[in-house]
Image (cartoon, rainbow, N blue to C red; front, side, top):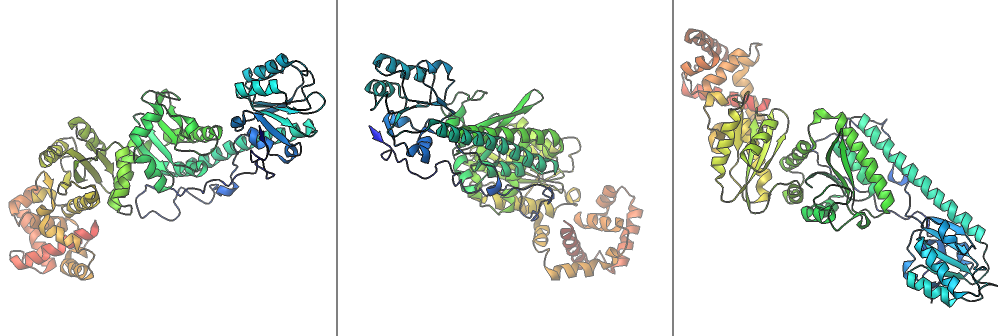
Length: 579
């Protein structure tokens, strides 16, 4: 037999709201340089402090009920099934009828004096068995006139059934216990409703304020106190929120974890061996007759019912956000854009982004990486071409007419040939003939990818505006940009800026930009007048007049190599400043 003291039933109130997990810092995936107050987060949006949010506790357990001060006054003693004291208590009944089991629906703690059971051991055993069949949480027997000591028949039956049997050694007013427990249960129910409304209100306010997807996930993670993962139907991670180290731990072996938890088939439980009882709670996302993905709470430490509530409210908000935000592109596109932006930004070390890339479906083991920057290329066309050509990779539109591509090729594939083929196919697409594809050298180390992406961007920017005149290869690399690349690297130097202004002052002061365009093409073609006239669709005499006007305004002789070179460097510096 186990006494109350043996079971650690202390006088502290076990129902006091526990000190929950520290609110998680969001692992933002946005590119660096974002403002301190995002435009979607005006002061009017309610942002509840985590300490002020309603937080329903776990359901009352048998152990917690026995630890109440009023119960301890009755000197409770657990005489059977002490290992089952963590069962949840849904309600408390005072019942003396021998057939009370037929009136129960499960989860009840039954209080009785056993006055109708005294003297009949078979009836006592059947009483326990009937409560077990009704899935009662526990039986509390008040010792007294009917049973001065714990009845052995009831104890044996309760032990066999695994139904906690508790006896009270001192008289105890059952009404006080039922009143207190029912009040606490109602309070818990209200807290759940309050939490649901709080989460819904906060997320809806963010949506109406134009918040991005990441902001909603951050808010859900704050409420849940655990990592939150958004996936597509193939378990590919599209976005996450939560403390960065915790998220990395989840993503490190995401493919195995996800399939072990839910398997391959749709539905609440899938075919995996895990489930919501392990703190992995998911909600399906979909609308208009289609399913899009899943929201997963990873390792939620609260009770399952509250986790399910949070997941459902979060899923509702994400579905609404997607239906209202068609212009922002698919979640897959936003995921690739976020990952590539973080790689380019360099704020987060590449090594920390590796689990995210792997979870997003990018092959990362023993691969050859080819970072690309595409000027004037359409990201959606690039993504379609990658799928068509069977090239694993990520594509993102990073703005300013610039798309980033990261190819992940097998080590035995010819990276240069495949990249050239991709560039050629892109320029064959309608409206893409002027796209400039720049690449860094193929890489075998993931840690070098950020530098490779920045190098490709540097090369693409260096030839921007003069690509047609330069007669560049299908894929432009650092060795192809020569002086342009150097000037772009030095574009922030004050002396270079002053030099450019001084050399080009005669043209920059005017309002006619045509002469500047002609000068740019003329110098880019190596002072080839025929080619320049052809590219500008003018006759040779018309070109001569324009060149004469340029020389007059600048006070230079473009037939002189040194003067032409000086003007060319100044123009390259000027163009680099405009990018």
